[in-house]
Structure formats: structure tokens, C-alpha cells
Image 1 (cartoon, rainbow, N blue to C red):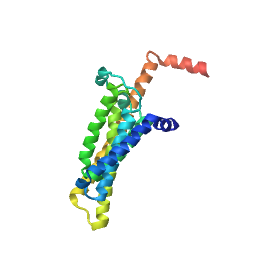
Image 2 (cartoon, helix red, strand yellow; image 1 turned 90 degrees about the horizontal axis):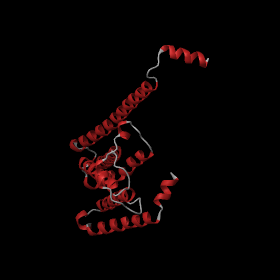
Image 3 (tube, rainbow, N blue to C red; image 1 turned 90 degrees about the vertical axis):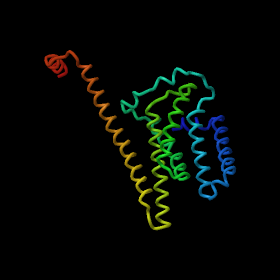
Image 4 (tube, rainbow, N blue to C red; image 1 turned 120 degrees about the vertical axis):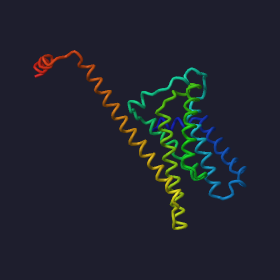
Length: 228
């Protein structure tokens, strides 16, 4: 974790972060008449900051860029198919939660926000590959989308909860959106876990078969006798 903190504290990253806050403040002031309410001003500022933070971490983590247009056609699918979940994958999920949360509180369209998050994630992966910042991996798109979906669920649940406390009632249509979002989120989590477990089991069986190919029971008895 210390390596990630030191990475975020590099001078060019701090400059970009300050620029993001200035841009968010300027945009909030510029659209103050359209946003009208104080809460929407807050959510707009938070959305711009969270999205800017996404671009800061994903696109500006290197001080110099290159151009590798051929890389855009080479997608890493092994990590997804083998169910390899590392720290980077978990960080990708966490990274997109605030953007999904604040954008949903601002626009109140969880499905639209989730769809935009998938598009933005795909574009980010393509830019990373083209400019040599990293590889474009399908698992990263899934992780980013899952984080945005989870953030949208939190935002929509908060919105409905506030409406219930204020009005003592919950409309059927917004509640149906919440239930649908939860179902999709649960389906992705459990479906992904089942797929990853199945793929890992198949991969292990193939490795065992390759390791013991050509051996017989007599070979096993000879090995067992030698070991004992």
C-alpha cells in the first residue's frame, strides 16, 4: 500500500489533482444557475472530482507517453478467464465507486450512469494501451463497471432512503430500479465467482493431467515404495 501512496504523492500527480479541484470548482460556479439547489451543486462538484481522479490515476500515472496503436487490438482475457483477482482489480472496483455514487445522486439515473461507466472504462483501457501506460484488460473493464454499479446502487439507495424519511413513502418505479440494480450486481458477483472457480478447476485438472501423462499404476507403486 505504501507504494501506491508514494505514487500518488509524486509532484506531477499532485499538480493534476489540484487542477482537477480547480476545474470542479470552476464548473460548479459556471453551472450554478442550472443546478439551482445546493445539494446538486455539491453532487456536481463531487462527480467532477471523482471522475477527474479516475483520469488522474489511470491516464497520468506515467510522466511520459508513447504511441502504440497496435496494442489497442490486443486484449488481455487470461486474467478474467482464470479468475485472477489481485490488488489492482480490487483497487479498480474501489476507484469507480465514488463516481457511480455521486453521478447517481446528481442525475438520478443509475442504469444510465452504469452504462456511461462501462463506456468510459473501455475508452480508458484503450487510451492506456495506445499511450503505453498499461495493457488493456477485459477484467479491468469488468472491475471498473462493477465498482460503478455498486456506487450507483449506494447512490440510489441513499436517494430512496432520504425520500422515505422525508415523505414516509417509496414510489414503486424508483424502488424497482433499486431492486434491479441489486439483482444485476449480485448476478455479476456470483456469476463471476462461479465462472472463475470453474475455470480454475478446469485449469488445475489440465495441469494435473499434463503432469501425470503417460504414467501408470505400476509407476505410482514404484514411486510410493521409493518414498516409503
